[in-house]
Structures are given as C-alpha cells and as structure tokens.
Amino acid sequence: MSLRPKKVNFEAVYAVFQGVLVDMYDFANAKVSGIDMFQQVYDMCTAHPRPYTEQLFNALAAFLSERCSACAAVGGIDVPTRFIVKQLTNPLFA
Image (tube, rainbow, N blue to C red):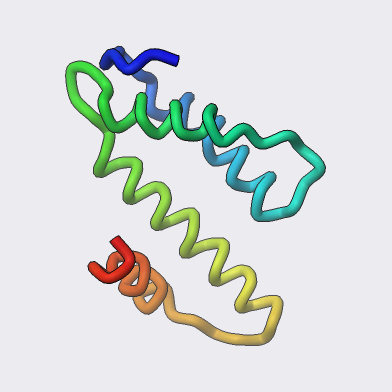
C-alpha cells in the first residue's frame, strides 16, 4: 500500500473496482477486501498528473442509479433516475 500519487489507468482500475461492487451487491461468494477497495479509490483520487475524482463520482453515481433502478424494477416500482441521482448528490449524505 502506497500513499504516493501515481499514474493510473482509470478504466482498468475502475473495472476491477466495479467488479467488486457487483460481487458485494449480488452477495456473491467472492472474497472482498476493504483495504484493496480503499487503495483503488485512493489511487484514482490522487492520480498523477490529474486525479479522477469527477470521473469516479460520475461512474459511481451511474452504477448506483442503475442498481437502484434494477432493484426497483424487480419490486415493480418505477423510480426516475433523476430522483436517485438527486438523493446521491444530496449534501446531507456527502
């Protein structure tokens, strides 16, 4: 684990990170390491020469919006995406 900023391929690191999120939300029988997830987020947010904070936020918002919509659809509830994104960006939850 290193705290030094480094060059990061956002698409590759986020693909691994999202795979772990999918495993968590699907209750897959996969081993999930919190420290690995923390390191991936840290690396993306402190990347050199430019951090990927905005891309990470947008990718996570899209992922969570899609997951919430899918869960709501299974339950027969139609939840507008704009409502989900509004809740995710609410300053009370930041």
